[in-house]
Structure formats: structure tokens, C-alpha cells
Length: 141
Image (cartoon, rainbow, N blue to C red; front, top):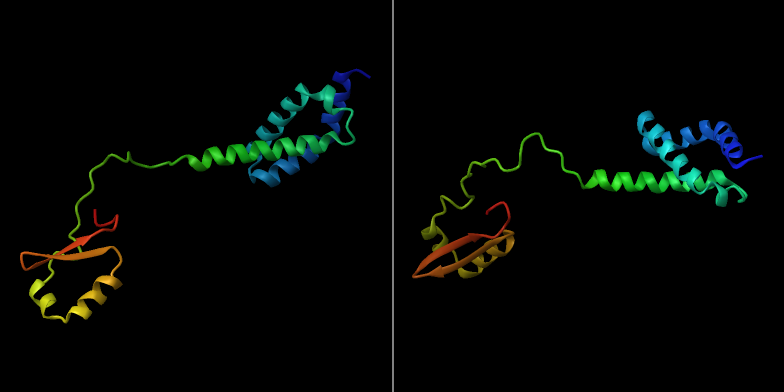
């Protein structure tokens, strides 16, 4: 038998099983058909080397798995947004916008330190007798 005939026989015999495996990988019949087709195209290119192996189907399954992982990684990097990301964002008032510094100064030093330590991203310092609070979180920027 020629290589072409052997390849056609393999595809005819194993196409359904490969399609089921591709569907298990992708969960979508259209993506599964694309995956099988791409794997068979790659198999045809190396058929003369693979046909002598014990199980050429395992070669196709490994190829399909690697192709699926590659597609999955590419799609994962995409960020699809309904609107362009360069729109203006309305400023929201800061958590500390109506902060009473006189009330803060009346607290004992240890209590002030505890409030600063327990509030993530808050940095406080005194400048010219006034307490300055800086929100260091990303949301505060």
C-alpha cells in the first residue's frame, strides 16, 4: 500500500475517535473539527515517519493536545472589552476626604499608629503641625 492510501485508511478508521477526543478537549464541535483538521494536516506532513510507529493515533492525540494548549494560551492573553479602555473615569471622593485632623490629633499616639497600621495602603505624616494622610493603594490613585 502506498503512503497516501495508508493515510486515507487511518483517517477513515480513526476520524470519529479523534473527533470525540477533540470535542472533549474543546467542548465545542466547531473548534473540535478545526483541531482535528489541523492535527491531521500536521500528521500528513510527517506520515512517513509516524506510520512505522506502534500507534500513530497517540501521535495525533499529543499533537491535538499541544495545539489546543497553544490556542488556549493565546485566547487567555486576549482582553476583550465592550468599550475602548481609554475612556475617562469619573473621580470618586477619597475615603479620607472629610477627615477631621483635630479629632485625629486628640487620639493617643499608639491609637493613631494602630489605625495607620490596620488600614492597608494608608500612610500618614505630620507637616507643619497638620496631619497628612496619603492613600498608597492603586484604587486611591
